[in-house]
Image (cartoon, rainbow over all chains, first blue to last red; front, top):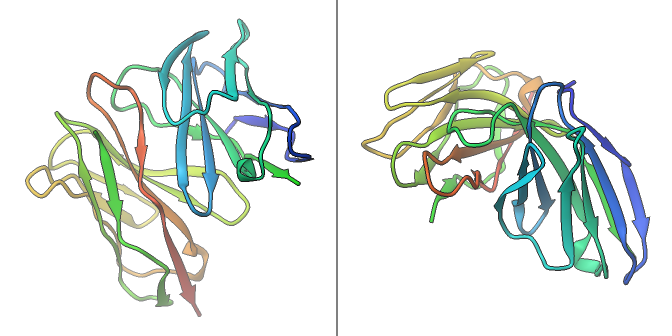
Length: 115
Length: 113
């Protein structure tokens, strides 16, 4: 158990809909990272928040947004969903956000299926 | 930009065989390097890490040495077990500028009894 929790575990929704994925980092961790894992694209970094502020942005679509709240939990919002958004979405946390050696602790993931 | 290249899988071995999974990287400066493992149906777990050149990371019988001259971080294990069957990801964390972590595509390892 990494200490990172993600809800829900599974999500099935239709194209055009909007969903919210939730992540609670390990106790004491200030950084939250979001990743998308699909068979054809591998593990893609989406976005990072550090202590409530956006720190880095990766391959995140404009239809996707995220935020980190004062209690450090984070939400990833996916809107106007398309079939291609079906994937595993992982959240990870780390104690810091700007140093090279901070390892990340991953949650169990949310499997999103868009039909 | 930064990149990580791993050997394509799946790698199929018999129990007690020697394992090598190759990983090379492209990055400026001195990134930290990591190996993560993902068991079926689970998230990634940190396996080992190295933060500077010539450092050796080790855990659970797995080892990898940070080779700056060849920009490599190959994962090795002397004797694999069926329970080592998983997907292994090589990753780097940059030393400055962009904070974006970079992962390889992952290498699937299948160990037969």
